[in-house]
Amino acid sequence: MLILSACSAEELKAALRLGRFRLHVGHLRLKISSIVPEFVCVLQQLYAAHPVMLDGGDFDFEIAISPPTPWRHWLRRNAIFEFCGDAPFEPMEVGHAFAMFEWGLNCAIASYLHNYLILHSAVVEFEGNGVLLSAVSGSGKSTLSAELSLQGWRLLSDELALIDDNLQLFPLARPISLKNSSIDLIRTRFPSARLGPLAKDTHKGTVAHLMAPDASVKLNTVPAIPKFIIFPKWTAGAPLRVEAVGSGQAAMRLIDQAFNYSILGHKGFERLVALVRQAEAWEIEYSSLDEAREAIESLVRERG
Image 1: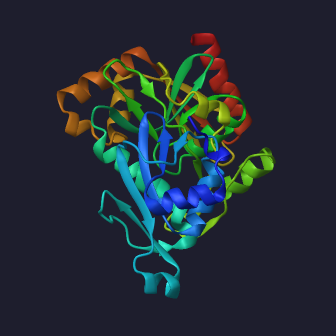
Image 2: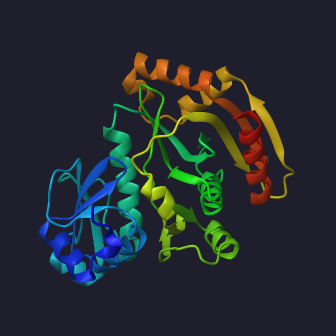
Image 3: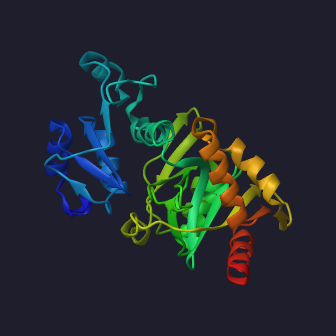
């Protein structure tokens, strides 16, 4: 299949303008349309390693990034996210268009893929062990998943864990959303990291997206088996703390981070119970990314 980096800018623009562009993210096929150049440029940069089609075809989700109206676009330079014809967000300035696309795609996946139990969690893999990094927003899970993926771990997702009825984690390796001070932290630690432009003054502050490693994208249809659940907590100046979490407590924490637990009903309960029985749960509080990475690697190597 064609890789986006092999397409010329003109080919991409034409496919997006005519509604023929298909982006493959894991097992999902996205129909994407856009005439917003700021969005098109970042899409081409940060999804360069992903498979695409330029001549149409079947799709699971239909997404458009468009001007609200032609006159308003040229007056205020805004863009709007449309999902299957609906516009769930207010228009945002064009500099936020790619971030809006990523947020909207997360929302669409969490709202419609109910054949999976969907958790608010990053997912990585190390030496054949799937690891969930589950935490509330602001706990540092995206920064930690960026650190791990840039140190050679396989990235499956920085935001959503998709768990099927066989307890497989389905990959959605996509750009990692970094916010505020995490952007400079990752850029300083990894000067060759491929980061998109800054989206300033969003409702989450300043946001930039980190391109997913090519090696992870190549494995984007290969599921992983969950072996560990990590509840990370970054605290400035805190010494490293690693504590085991019981399966009951782990289940309650994961319920709080589940998007569709109540929708799945008994199936969701059974899947969650099976998950916490299969995967060891640990809480890690840290202030140093090096210490956190080394602690998680030690856990996986010793107990995986």
